Amino acid sequence: MNPLALDPLNPRRDFLKKLSAAGLATLMSPAPRLLGAGPDGEKPDAPRARADACILLWMGGGMAAPETFDPKRYSPFEKGLSVSKMLSTFPAIDTSVGGLRICQGLENIARVMDRATLIRSAVQPDLGTILHSRHQYHWHTGYVPPQTVAAPHIGAWMARVLGPRNPVMPAFINIGQHLEGNGEAEELKAFTTAGFFGNEFGPMNLPDPASAAAAVRPPKGMSPGRFADRYKFYRQLVDKNPRRDFMSDHQQESMLRSMDNAQRLLASRESAAFDLGLEPQASRDAYDTGHFGRGCLLARRLVENGARFVEVTTEYVPFFHWDTHADGHSTLERMHREIDAPIARLVLDLEARGMLDRTLVILASEFSRDALIEGVPGSKASDQATAPSETLQEAKHYGLHRHFTGGTSVVMFGGGMKRGHVHGATADERPLVATKDPVSIKDLHATIFTAMGVSPKTAFNIEQRPFYATEDGKGTAVESLFA
Image (cartoon, rainbow, N blue to C red):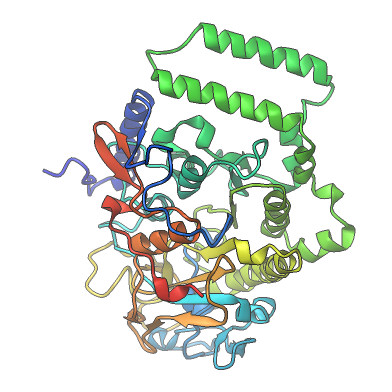
């Protein structure tokens, strides 16, 4: 029996149990050792870095490609419309690239597509059960869960292998995702970590971008001197009472270093980057379409001040935002409004500051959506949809609902990628699977790592075996995407 297989009767609970076991094993593990490093510590087979920083714009919940960046035949809503005719519920619009069209509602992004590489043929495995948490774990770590050790987030790989761009600025920052009070909070926490690398390479979590400044200030009413004294006392307490029954020396030391890093940030001038109130009002207004838009502005300020990897999410909450099991079209109208202006403004701001060429901006989601198919043709995954199987009778069923892994869009700006380029294609009629140049998560990650100057074969020794940046070190960068 496969020890990593999930209980088919309760896959979510079994998934959590296995993740918890992997996390505990990781806490007790010794320090991971970089394999293959040269005598001076240089990285193995390190490619030439095209980018110094990376911003991941995460469309949590399953962004439907036919409703965003890969429009198909458009059919307006009418009672009795055949579900089989419902491919795109938005008409296509022209972009700044001749012949390239995306969906209505993304007019601002359309105007900057001449700076973009659009991958229309990203694909994912069904993983047996198509759970958001499993697919998000897979995308963010490159590994199918559960694993016997806690796999690091791709941002943690950047922090560990490349180090900080600015010694006082956290290398890895996560913006917009609340990790408490969410229906799948524990699953999200499982991949929003540095895994076996240790706390110092994990993310600084900023759930509310508008309140980020509070994260780098002493608590209200506490003087800086008193706060510093409390920090010193707490550090001594932890240092003198190590919990080696719960964590290894490596994890203990990593936690202490992360505390030191946080203290340095609080006393630095770079802490001002977290305060959106210092941004000109016109700029704040341009980004402020809501939670996500403010996150994009914060990401720009943080990268300007030396952050290495920043993730900004529309926030994954079950049955909200991109998780469109009902009211798909109206929800997607709102999501278009939320992402369109700030993403375009982020690209233009980076370009105006001379930063776009050395900053890789990625827009991605765990999978796409389709009205008829769960997964890919032939999938045995259980159906997640509530839509009728033949004709539409209510507007709430107008939109894409089911999870689809056969053809997903990814957009990449800057970072050495081609401009105005389209890679791959999906079928014009169902099933909307990738029909040209498919890109797996393994190869997508290899492309991202290569752009950042990290070999996809980079490995660390953990539990007496190599653990690679891409699964088994076999990820291959899609070289045709680079300029």
